[in-house]
Image 1 (cartoon, rainbow, N blue to C red):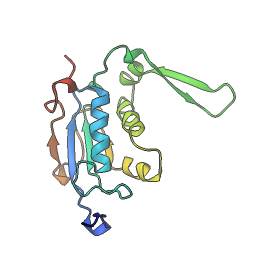
Image 2 (image 1 turned 45 degrees about the horizontal axis):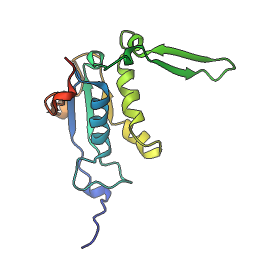
Image 3 (image 1 turned 120 degrees about the horizontal axis):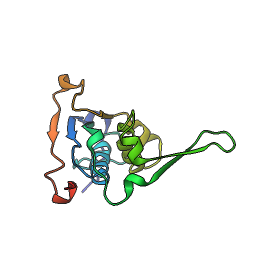
Length: 152
C-alpha cells in the first residue's frame, strides 16, 4: 500500500465559523490550529497548506481559567530597556481583544514558513459580525464538542 501525498490539485478548502462566546481560550486555540493545519482531514499532508479558512467571532467574550487574566504578556520594542508588558485581561478589555486569540493560535502552530502562511487563513473578530457571508461558512459548535470547552 502506497502512502498518500496530497498535491495542490487535491486540496479542497472550506470556510468554518466558530463562535468563541464562553469558550475556554486554550481549547478554542487548539481546535482552530488543527483546522488551520488540516489535521482533521484524512488526506493530511504535513508540508502542504490544506487547512480550512477559519472565522472566529465574539473573541472579546472568550473565557480564561485560573489566574490567567492577570498573567503578563511581554514584548520588546527593539530598543535598550524596551521591554513592555500588559496583562491578558487588559488586552481583552482594550481596543483589540482579538489579538489574544490570534496569539494563542499562533503559538500552537509550528514556527516555520508554512504556519505563517496558514495564519493568513484565520480571521478573528471581536464582535458577532463578519464580512464573509458570501463564502457560506459552516458553523462549528466548539462549545458542544466537550463539556470542558465552556466555562461556567
